[in-house]
Image (cartoon, rainbow, N blue to C red; front, side, top):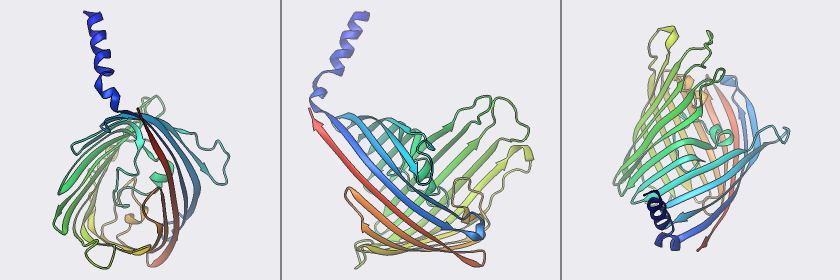
Length: 331
């Protein structure tokens, strides 16, 4: 019986689908300069570096894909070994609108959360999701969910993970978006009296209109809705803190230039992975965008931001450059 099962396994694995197997590879570069003069929230800093990414693997019928690779961040002004190379290793399934990832895989093209919930510094310093992602798309919408396991409990290391879901539903020129994210921080196996288990949840639900391609502008999108959070430190015994407020956003793009505007009003949020400006009860942001390359293997964004917070104006300058080369070899 065991011999029969072995023969059956190899027959299935190396039968007709083998004819449509392809060897695939990818090499990429990400460069970033992010200068943040955030004096109103007391965390001014500059992040400047570049990342190299490489993957090799194969696919069957463009449905099943297996990839392995590495990515390495060199942050300018540091030693070459200041950041250890990170492993990329994942399985992907993509068929009939269903997309599934399992393993360690890039987050950039999968998660598009508002900065209030997920800061863009994750793209610089933690570009991979380690866990699971699943999504489903159809002709009038899409919804996805993910689990990112950030550390396993040991005697001295905390158990931490992040999970969330997001989606967008279209009704002609109108849309309804939803974003939900939960972060869980448990203790180490050896009890630390200075640490307490913490749960942190953020959400954003908004509605808007997207007239991209229907005016002389390339992109025209306006939306508004609710931003809220739930935060609890269990040892304190005070229950959940539940601030809520209004978040409005608009973006206008024409050819290689554009303007993006954001406004928040409400209670100060507690969002552990979000942009710290949303800890304030009032915040406005205006971004002047230059996009020399918007599609294809090379993408570049130059962003000059004005941040209206705490009764003053802060500034930021951001440059992001992505270059990708990939290829396939049919069998």
